[in-house]
Length: 113
Length: 113
Image: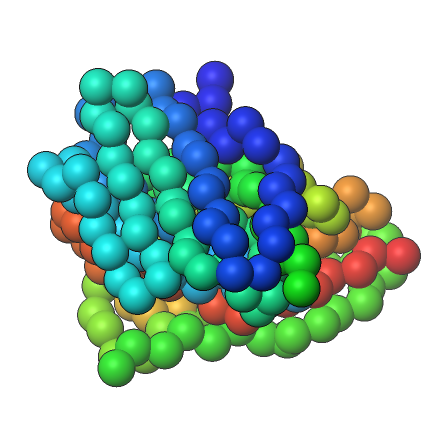
């Protein structure tokens, strides 16, 4: 049973436009959510996170939105750049922080120049 | 600051040979440690995690094993590799407790021939 789902395996966006990556979860006990970016043959790098007590967190071009009632979060990248082309994983954490993060299967973003 | 090291970066091994991948973390104490595998074009599969020395939890039964002989050292092993063990292996660490990010190592590309 997938508790964290990224239903779009891939997304193409033109350079300069907004990229929106979506993630849904089923476990209402998750209280902390994270986004990671992964280039081929490299480890994922942490991008941005959000606590369940917030509905928005912004860091430069990256903004994460959380809709707890819908159990949905999204990552907005504005403006998109070719270097943003990568696989993006969302992850969720239970309150203790000592159980493993639950990852989605990832969305491959291609930013076209 | 904290750093995570993995070696080797790449490895080509024959079927039936043993495996030992090592991961070490610097700059933190008592981290939670994780081993993941990413098969070609797939998501992140959690293999093992550890919340302390000698404490190993296995997520997927297979011919791999993990050990944590020291606080900041995590080792992934196999006695006899299978073709299906090929993949990209990632080590990660996370501070215990709520609201913490997880950080990944650079990964090891394992090819079993």
